[in-house]
Image (cartoon, rainbow over all chains, first blue to last red; front, side):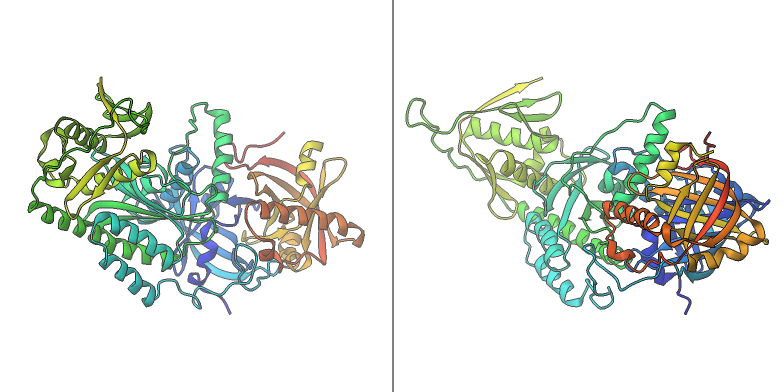
Length: 465
Length: 152
């Protein structure tokens, strides 16, 4: 029985290289590797066009072609007889293919070096099994037979109910983002995840929560267009990358070749928490009425972890999560409206020369960089740095240790954005960063819209240009 | 002419595909399993599972022009050999150990990029057919701007 193109979806993830056969008008055949074959619809596929090469010239003379794609799950090879139809240089198909190339290049630190010139669309005239590439039962990454996705679905009603119940129980932004990542792990099996939110700086995201990594990573920043998170934020579209290692090898091979002719190829790695060798990545924008609330990124060491239905389900879930995040921020803001500042005395300062206490922390706020260093080690920058500096100064001058979100909002010196200041996420980020780096300075929630600054070491505060 | 250094690369156990086209200019192709270069560097023998060779045989015999791509999965180094058909024959049993060694080398290469060997357990290697070519041109195919450039 001839398979449908839809049933070959796993072949179009780039896990195994495809082979492209063309022929010139005078009958000279050409065989070449292809970086990417993409599913378009029930009777069309798209091939990535990045370089002018013999295949492309042949197609201009003779639109017939054949592509061989192996199924990475079963090993079955498929021969697709094709006829060139058109090239797309914009639109959803082009964007999707270009984003995949950009995501891989960005992961290698080679963003902007490789460009998709066009998504070449071909009509599929026939599909035949390659007899030399006979398939077996699907196997997992360790080569063990695995159950089909249909027999073992991930997004079950039970799993969704479990996640929903976790989210309903979350009464703060912190509890909510932790519930989301924990739920994605325990209910759906997505072990490695992170959430990023936009900062007050245009085009910059910051990590506020992670799960499954050795480092917490709170505070790690990424610019729009960098890595999968930055690309998702820039494009405001979900991005799924499978076979990342293969894609990276391909990108690095191209880079090596390109560098021989063009010396201006920077190599840079993005300092974000992540798996050392990810094979699959999925990033979805968390959007509410077009506003980017955050970006959710999932990673896996399994080459084909995120299937098409996962992307669709997570994208749908992303809208729900975005609304939940926005709602909890509004709830916190409403609650804080009724709060008043509570004065409380500072704890007694350690007396020099008495019982040995913790060492004095030297905290320096660099006005020019808008950043705080503790004992010469970078802690945080931007709005969270200004907030911490204000809290520490108030504590030093008045002894007060209890604060409200409302008073921060009213403090013009903090330069919070007038509209949608995302204060809660900045406080969460600051709290996590302190917990990770400076546990002797802590921000402890005291109910909605209120928190305490707890300091257990003597501090010296210095401002520098 | 395939120089000794390139011959070593072609024989180390790579992903090999053989492309042909029939009289109606319909391109066809199949996976090959091994290749050997003659000492003169002017001839190449490509081995295909016989089930694959059978599919290409009519086009091979009607056109005779052949393209063979070679790619190493671990770093995507690749090249293409263009040639003209000299002959088709059953692979000699004596050649089987060398063919199998190349095939295993390729599977090891795939395993190094995370593709489990079990995925390819069903791929056919033997009986094989030997397709002997006279080399007419060599091309760089490593991805990048130089892909397609003629090799000396």
